[in-house]
Length: 241
Image (cartoon, rainbow, N blue to C red; front, side, top):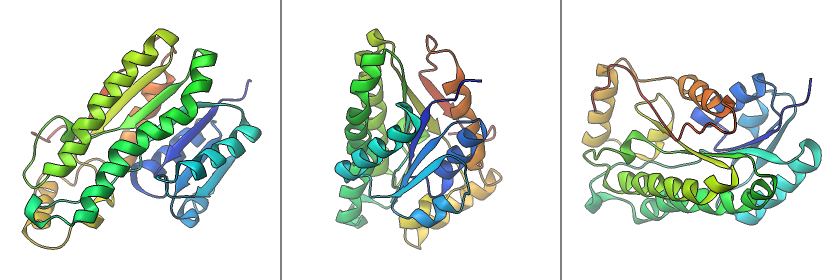
């Protein structure tokens, strides 16, 4: 059986990224895993996995990692732009550094990393870029103003890039999860905002697990190259918004 192609996953040390690493590896793909911490990625114990500790805002470091991975596993066929940040608060209370970091991770990085692998995909007339957005890129929530703004922007840029690459048989997909039980709340301080979020999460049974989203991602990717599941919104059945 022919070897399956290389998959690159950012934010792979936890949550949806780690789940995607497990799912795509189990399906037989070699994987390049990127996150600031190498140890959690290495602890996944995946075969044919290159785990690189890098801040994904360092495009040069990511480019070097991709070159290493492609030397061992062949060209990138799927880039999963999963790394992101969520910090919830009214705008007046938001840490200015969090505002900048959210736009950098959620909006700028997916564009810059896509630029790294697009020339090869366009030349081969194949490949997939999968951006992990959010249901917060479709609906405005209280205390989510900046986070929603980054995800609305990512959704728009994903569709724009899809239109640019479609004539070249390159797929660009958006995966927009609803409530998922991950560590994404780590940048939201204690108080009413966090308490309200956790209360709603509890009211719907805790949300999806990361593996639910990863399974949807694998399904979308496994469709034939001439089929593009452009937008996948995956949320708990009982989530009402």
